[in-house]
Image 1 (tube, helix red, strand yellow):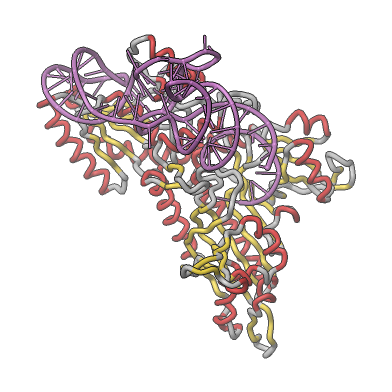
Image 2 (cartoon, rainbow, N blue to C red):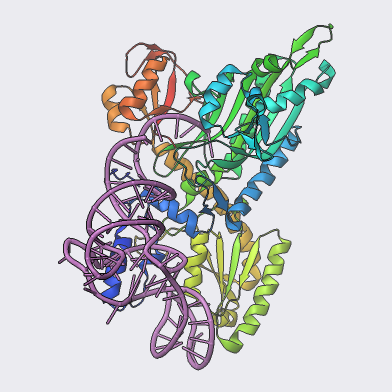
Length: 517
RNA sequence: CGGGGCGUAGCGCAGUCUGGUAGCGCGUCUGCCUUGGGCGCAGAAGGUCGUCGGUUCGAAUCCGGCCGCCCCGACCA
């Protein structure tokens, strides 16, 4: 599979769209409708993504530039993500809390690197109560909450007995963006931010890596998305962190997407806010801290990992609806079908399956097939009079691929009594098969590169494992000359000394280079 | 902020070059019909042509300003 990116000169419209207006104006149209088709991934990946988000009713642009309306179909995915993550946070001992959206401007200034790096992205409240606010009393809308949370931590922490403090917050944050994209980069977005305080550096490091593992597990088990876990370079670190770690995923266009980050903050914020505890020995010590987060960007990652030219594909564990039962038939035929469907749906609910019945008589079955494929329902049960005669239903899996291009993906014929069990099994299969498929894709598009020529030849090909001399200058050259950014230094990669792929200078290991979102 | 494209019905577009009654497809509504891959027929509703100004007997169309959106870069989760 190849999803070559179009050049910037290519028109943004698909051929289908271009032929739409005028041709239809002259020829009275019969049958198909160009409007209904998505642009394809090979044709224009970003158009495909944008259209898919809108047509699958995941989100809309709003009149506020960079802000989005998350629609029920999209928000349901987020809710499932939240639930799974929240459970994992609870299992690891964290508690939820909530801190204010407005942060006194002066708080940010207390961590130098923090304020310097965030300043261009921060929205400031300059007026309130009908009056301008004095310079020293202005607020920023949180871009992240390290500062204001540390304000509280300073009050909460007295003794080593108060540690560790393990807090998580579900919240919206705002970072002014020049080029917003639905889910991937919006000015306002939803996320969770974990914030913890520890007595020792070792404890904080352990926590940082523990939560990175949680993210990896979530990506694998729920999103069916393989990720590369590793350490960020100096220049890619979170402003104010000692170390930043990330999970990096590969999208179907072979670009990388940072899917989650975990930071070891050291004592940087503690020192700015005097967050101190008294040790067993009676000494005053600064706490060691971590923070970690994932955002609604994950929904974008999910889309670009699994979806196809028919529309959304979502792993069952996160799907808003796992099964839709479509009732087929006319007039009196529908009654018995509907009764059977309702009984089946009830059994499915008992089995913990999120099921939907479509009994809308005003739309034909074909329309519904296409529509639910677009919307990402995992399984479709087709049930009509002919099926009932044979005591069977027809089941179509959203991730099924046609045997040959142009053909339709095969469907299963399943005895009515076996349908619920079949669906349960199919959902499990689909969950693991999506992961497998994505993992194969990632592996097939990961390469070692050992020379400038290879780097050049491979720059659009996916994850490139390359030796790097560790200097920001070389990092900048990767970016300027090849549009490649350093994603992270993978934990799972055996690190051996070598020579920097660009400069030939000594390197102590390989990093992942990739074009990135 | 730079480079490209675009604002005409709910959506997708034609009409603009060459000024002269506001169009097409989809969707919506009504009725009939139909139901196993985006049904069919008939009828209907729906638009200050982004905005402000200029030219003209007359502007969606020509000229100028402004606003907004999308794509590609620079910033970023």
